[in-house]
Amino acid sequence: MIGEKIRVGLVLFPELTQLDLTGPAEVFGRIPGAEIHLLWKTLDPVSSDRGLRILPTTTFAACPELDVICIPGGPGQIELMEDEITLQFLGTAAVHCKLVTSVCTGSLILAAAGLLAGYRATCHWSSIDQLSLLGVEPVHERVVRDRNRITGAGVTSGIDFALTVVADLVGHQVAQEIQLQMEYDPAPPYQAGSPRTAPPALTEAIRKKNDALSNSEGLLRSARQNTLRTPRSKPESRELLAIFAERRASESGRTEPRANGGRSPQVRTFMREACIDPLSPFNAFPDGRRL
Image (tube, rainbow, N blue to C red):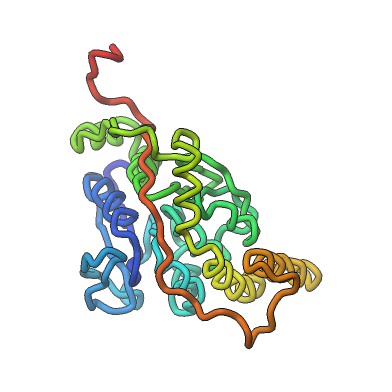
């Protein structure tokens, strides 16, 4: 697509994690001739989970056909998985896209829209197991590609993910030029950005901070809708919902799933810790230690 205008749409929503969006936006904005759309239902400011207010540039209704659509993650992901307007928009927009993509728990939103069923994908390390409950094959990698789906893992992996997308669209040379322009040469002060390298006690502490029960409640409701969007037999649909109900009961310490009327209220704050991992798709920097 070198020399062609490339339209990239990044979806905003309340309580998103801003780096899931702004990391890829910084990379995509450096593609020669790129047209970037920050998408939401209205043009009103959207607040991230840390209070940063971001201005949409394009409404869903005014969105042109896109070459790439990207869904970030964040605490607001739970509510968005039940937002019919957004899910329908994603389903419609994806039809014309060369690449359908996500960062962090954005892959759960794609799955809720029925856009990842039967695909391999990744997610934030603390939520990746939930992909399988939505008919997706979870892969514990920084960036995962399956056909025209590209997904990035937690938060900071959005830069690695975006460079991978750029390479697909306009080639490795342009992707490496962007990496060098951004001086993306990660060397974090701690080797604690992934469960692979973090002390086990730290990993467990972060897991406990994540409200797994509240997320399963949201996933259960999303599963009910997802079975309608993704072609399944009735037994398969019932089995999927049964898995969710069993998971919810197990996490709540109950031997039997609670009745709908007795479920806990949805918790709006679903913490996502930034995941810094010193891996990137290119090594474009002159580094004496590596020459």
